[in-house]
Length: 330
Image 1 (tube, rainbow, N blue to C red):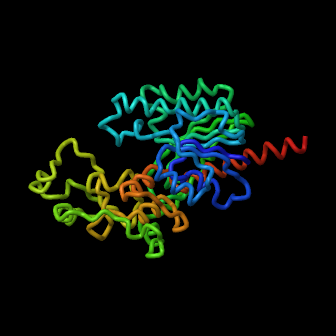
Image 2 (cartoon, rainbow, N blue to C red):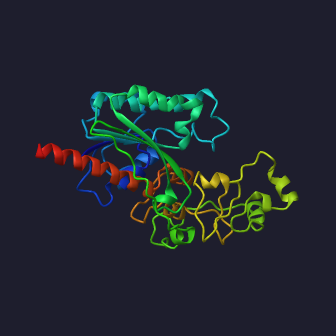
Image 3 (cartoon, rainbow, N blue to C red):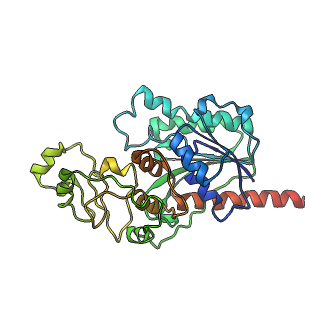
């Protein structure tokens, strides 16, 4: 099946579709505006990626396909992005969903998939998901929120999955995995053979001083009041600030962990890029490229987890196979 990838990022969703199914999906086009993400994509997925602003993409340059997948910019929907979600820039990012609709409308694939933060479904009383429902009304559309932990992942990360189909309604299975994976299991995969093993932000002395007081599962509130004052923490400080991972529990959702100072379970430092990638479900066969450490960190944080991507892939593949099998028999 020919696949077009929009808002491709580093290709984490594309990777989940390809791994183990390389002979079933052929990616014919990808697009993202981030040069570093495109470099990572090119190394891991293929040279078909175009580094461009999706608003400038001519639909005639996009190949015909069976499937379109993508994750339109999620930062302006997310509750973790308090400071600019109500700005004009935030609104412009949210309206990029219109370009996903524009390209999908023109190419008319059998199926399309949108993955995003759950707030896509509720932001501004559902304004943005309504744009999808109205703009692509020729499709049977289902909306589901999937938790990484419930489909075999290492984190509490949740994603909204929107599936549009012209080959019969596609509903994601309701059965979920009950055996919980842990941070310990994810981190145990990482060793010095990983490409990004040494990619870590070195903490300042004041950061290490605060980290020492935070137990596994704790956060900035475990730090003495006088140190809290030095950092300017108070009633509006998010609970994710200086959060220390628990070895034997799930990881919280990974945003850019350098900014929140998501701390290693047993060491006074933040996660390396490899450790964060492992929590996202990646293996060492998916190196993260980019000119700056911050870029490599953000690429991982922006992605969809491997388990969620694989879960969606399996449902899509089964539906496509069933449709074309019936068609051949007919």
